[in-house]
Every structure is written in structure tokens, then in C-alpha cells.
Image (cartoon, rainbow, N blue to C red; front, side, top):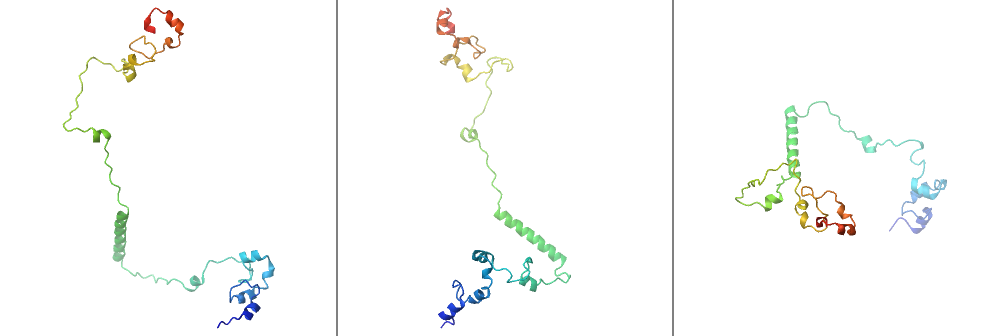
Length: 188
């Protein structure tokens, strides 16, 4: 049977919103509850319960840290110098091995071009074609697809010179009536 009967709970529960058995805290803070709005008290708590000095700051030391200190070293070497160096070496070596296992080197990429992979023929030997005439790259016009096929393309303006077919030409903007007056059919 519970020690808290409904009469005791109703008698001790001042606000009737506290948990069962929390009536002791409710009774202790009942006088302070009227000091401000209920929402501020619920959010910030009661001022002056833990300490009387309300301007005091928290020290940041827990009771555990305050009561129990780490044991102080006596200043005497616990391990020999050789043992310490051996432990450092083993830790370094094992950490490098673990790092190498977890982060392996990326594989070296095999660079292979399209011509190398698709047009590689066994026994193929390249050779330079013999020259048909003497060429001078500084004075000869460049040979392109358009300069080589300009006679067969429709819509190209009339070509007056063979060495430079794409220079300015007025026949494109010349009216048709004036073009028909021309005796020379090369401009049409």
C-alpha cells in the first residue's frame, strides 16, 4: 500500500501539477513562486535558492574534480629510455601499417587513346608520301575543305582568282538587272 493517500497528496500538492512525491520541493518554493510570472520561473528557475550571491559566476569545477585529484608523479622514471624508444617506434610502425591498409594508394591509370586502342594494326609501318611539287608554307595559301571544294558548293560568290577564292566580291550585292547586262558569264 502506498504511503501517499489522496488526502495527503491533495494537502501537500500546492499547485496540483507536480509529480507524485515532489510536493516537498513544491512546498519549499511556494513562497518564491509569486515573485514573477510563472513562465519566467519555469524557464529560468528561482533566484537565490542555491546561493545568496546572485552575481557569482559558475566556477566550472565539478565535485568529482574537486574531491579527486590525479596522482602526482614522483619524478622517478617508471620505464627505461630504451623501452620508451621501442614503444614509440612500434606505435609509429603499426600506425603507418594501419594507415596504409585503410588508405591504399590509388591505382596508376592506364592512359590509352582512341587511336591506340581502336586503330592499332599489327605490322603497320608509316611512311611519308613523296612530294608532288615544291611547297613553301610562308607564301602558299592554306588548303582547307572549303578552299578545295569551292567550285562544287552552291551559293558561293563568284571567284575571280584561284589563289584566294574567299576575298571580297561585289557580285553578291549587285542587283540582278545589272548582272544580266554583263556580257561576261563568269560573274554569274
